[in-house]
Length: 155
Image (cartoon, rainbow, N blue to C red; front, side):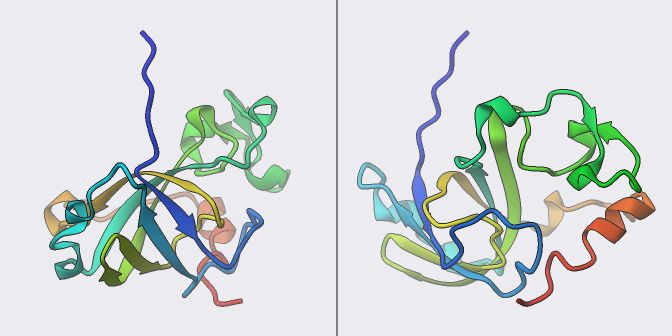
């Protein structure tokens, strides 16, 4: 079965390179494609956050990882499967980030803390609803906490 997914929007952002850290307070604009009616965003500004699903379009398909590796190629961290990490070189190259909603201007949604570069195709936008967040405490290994230490710090 072959499935085709079309971009519903594109990211406008100051960052043009997929860097690993310092995404805190980064502002981005998601502009709906012409085929998408701007009413698709109606009411989105009532939510504090949205989840943005996007394509890591700058990843060379030849560099996609389908097995295990050291996160960020750091041998100090354990080798774990690609589905046990959030790296960009993953099958289907799909990213997902929860972002703050800063506002809406017609067919444009302005957000902060989206870790996607300029020109990134957006596959979907979903409002963050409390009921879809974890209903119990989350846990993660120490290496993940260390990896994320500077991720959301300001540049």
